[in-house]
Length: 235
Image (cartoon, rainbow, N blue to C red; front, side, top):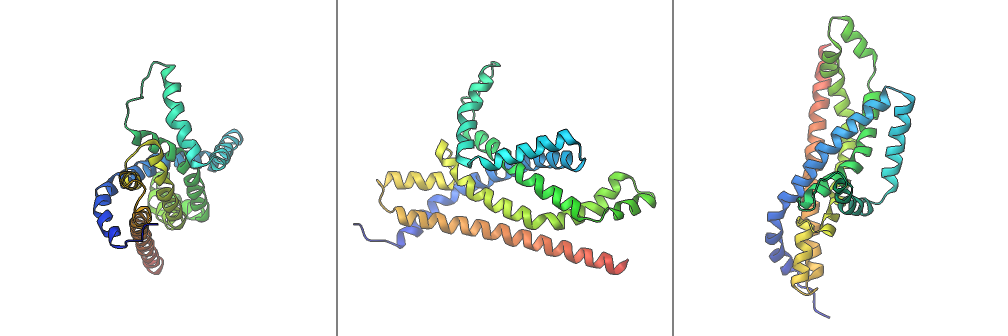
């Protein structure tokens, strides 16, 4: 059995660095797409329409029951077949499209609950008070409700984002070359040698990436809380 070479970790890291951008781009695209869908789902649920509520709950339940890798394969192999029926050929489209589509569907389910719980955590009497002094509904939401909703949403959003980055490593299974995909290529080129060292290098990169995200969101939450305290004191 080949001995462990810790120095190889530092040889692999520079080869992985250029692909961090791919991982971040896919994550950003998913947050954008999944966040928008999640916002629409949350709005439908908050309005308490019976049919809309049933549809949203069904969507959330189904997406939470399907493993991410299964959903990825369904989208990757099934979506081109479905669109081909309508004469649309997406077989040559970049694999990132399928990854972002898949994880947007899954991420939206989590974000719908994040948005809903954050909105319902804010005292609605504040909106009524804002409207009573002449603000429009939009102004009341933007200036009064939204900052507070953001504070309540950040912890759950951070957890969802961390899970997204970890699950996003499955993108290599359909051939997308992000940091995980590049790691798999390196292992393949070495005929399986230095696998442990390569995975440890990947561990370091994912750990740093997630740590930076958590610290950034924690800093944002702290700043928003400070601003809220100042406003409460001034009031």
